[in-house]
Length: 229
Ligand code: OAD
Image (tube, rainbow, N blue to C red; front, side, top):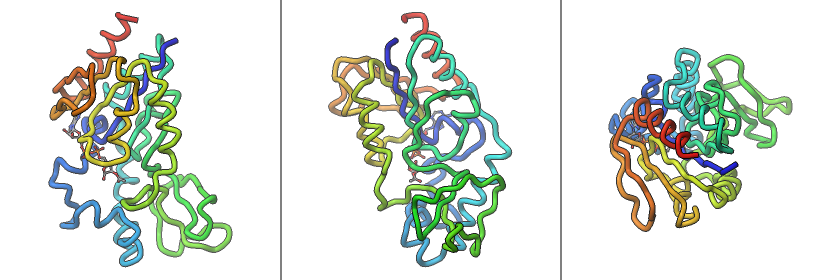
């Protein structure tokens, strides 16, 4: 089976009702996203950081996967599909995708600030100051913040290098290292970029730019790829 690798960003979840980061000026309560999703923000105002992620976690219980997420599941009929997502939601998993790697962490997980190997699933939406791990340390969101290393990147790189087909869906391609993944794929493989604001990525050959919303563009592309396979 050919290996099909998909890099997704906030845009694939937009039609499920989850706001993207940069389409609404990248502002939340007048703070730039980089000023909330950072170790400095956690140091200075952990309550604010918890509130930001609590709102998002709560929203997860109210949204559903859309046609874009669902279409990617159908690809598994004929391809060995690996999704590398920048999203912290669980909509790919809930749609039924088998292999999902979260580059930027997961909203439903929290981890110890004293021992990062202690990671827990949260079965409710609210994480509060005073919620501690089994060793008594404060819990924080299991999210990769700006300025922090991206532990899953090496694994994502391995997957991208093996791709026979590479899809990019719903990402502004401005946040690195995720945005650089496409540059590590084999030059000759077919690549597709679905996003209303998709653009030809410099230095990337054999790239088809599809300026459509994920809910429309992805099912069409999936039908085409399944037809070709
Ligand atoms: P952005 O908010 O930067 O970009 C969202 C992209 O989705 C844009 O290119 C939009 O054109 C596109 N878009 C909007 N509606 C769409 C739709 N219906 N279908 C398809 N595409 C649509 O989000 P990301 O690229 O995911 O990191 O941002 C990357 C990272 O920056 C995030 O993972 C997050 C953020 O700060 C962290 O929090 C660490």
